[in-house]
Length: 78
View (spheres, rainbow, N blue to C red):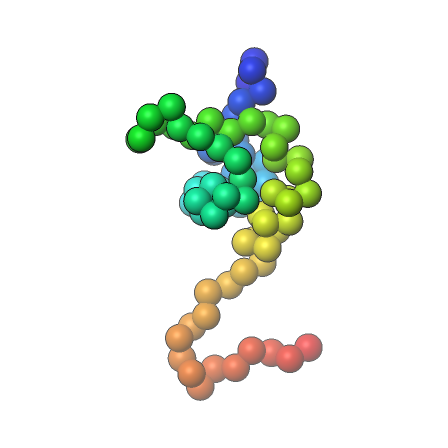
């Protein structure tokens, strides 16, 4: 982390999400990151994880659950 860069796994741990979720956040442009070439590891700047937009997007993903697809099931109304 000499240059303030972290790995995808480190970003996942810091945001308390899975590495797959970090990839989704990158794909939807919620988390800034780049690759030196296609297939290379993602370059993520550690300070970017502190941005409220990134934290909020990670939290939203953490609490998101896939729908079952069964139309008979209904969501709880609390």
